[in-house]
Amino acid sequence: MQYDSRQNQKGFTLIELVVVIAILGILAAFALPRFAQLSEQAHQSSIRATAGALSAGVALVKAQWVTNGSTTAVSAVDGFGNDDVAVNDDGWATSTNGNSGAPNANRCLQVWQGLLQSNAPEVATTAADDTEYLVGLSGDDCEYEYLLDEQGSTIVYDTDTGEITTTIN
Image (cartoon, rainbow, N blue to C red):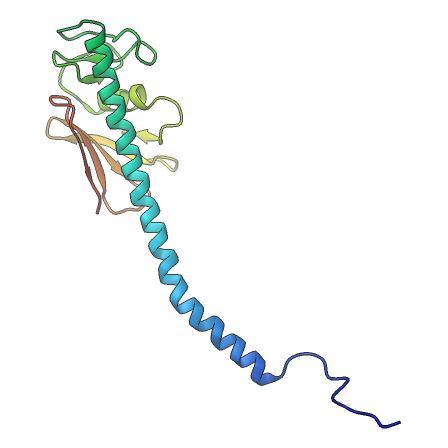
């Protein structure tokens, strides 16, 4: 009986391993930039979705104010959320503490929490580990700066007109 060495060969040759490593390297060179771009797109989508939710909240509180027959500022719009959202003379949300005056950082924080309610992104007037948006003022408007991508993207809410402006950097 003759012994054939080819029958007992198991495993890969050095050439096969080098080819596989080269193919993996080429795939990685194309895939890594794409994955990095997906992360950036996810941040942008998150900002747009949050701005859309805030805009919907602003519109809903205004609609409830109109439905209630209000024509002036009220300290709490009945039938919306926790019945604690204050609005100005035009029906735009201004706080949850009954104040319908010009915004400040605390009132902007209240608007965010009153309109977005549960499952809203974390927002604060000073940055902390779990803070997603930093509240501040942009002139007389509420400004919410997105912190997670460190690009300075913002959502601005104008309490005079109800307009939501999103700037993605």
